Structures are given as structure tokens and as C-alpha cells.
Image 1 (cartoon, helix red, strand yellow):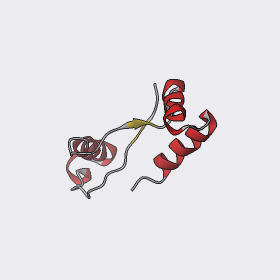
Image 2 (tube, rainbow, N blue to C red):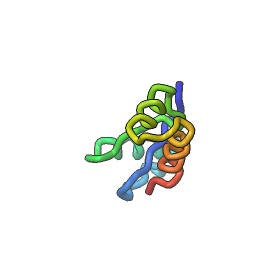
Image 3 (cartoon, one colour):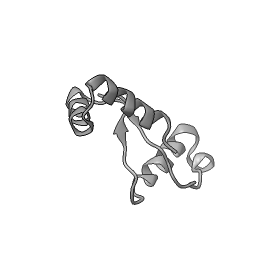
Image 4 (cartoon, rainbow, N blue to C red):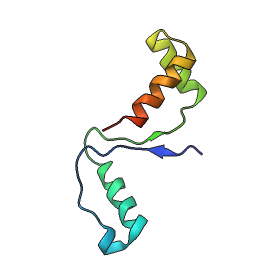
Length: 76
């Protein structure tokens, strides 16, 4: 199973003090997915995803992979 990455655009109230550590943070992050425009994506795209990105952009799969990595690592 792929790892999931997400970027939270809005600051959310921390649940760490109520539920403790990573559980509270996970609940906060999952709640943010309910916000319009938010989604979870795999850190490592499938070969099908890369091929589709390469076709859509008119670039090689290697360039599509570099673009995907840049978007994941530089999300606000």
C-alpha cells in the first residue's frame, strides 16, 4: 500500500491535548480532508498515474515523476 501525503491549507485546532499525540494529529488531518479542495494522494504514484501524467503533459515518464515529486514536496 502506498503512503499518503497531504497538505493542509488552513490551520486547524490541534486535538493533541484531548486525544494525545499522533492520534489527535491524525484526527485533525482527516477532518481537514472534509474541507473543499483537499484530498489525499499517494507519495509514490503508480505506473499508470505516471504514464497518464506524461501523456497529458507531453513529457517523458521520468519528467512526470520529477513534476509529481516537486508538487508533493512543495505543497503549501
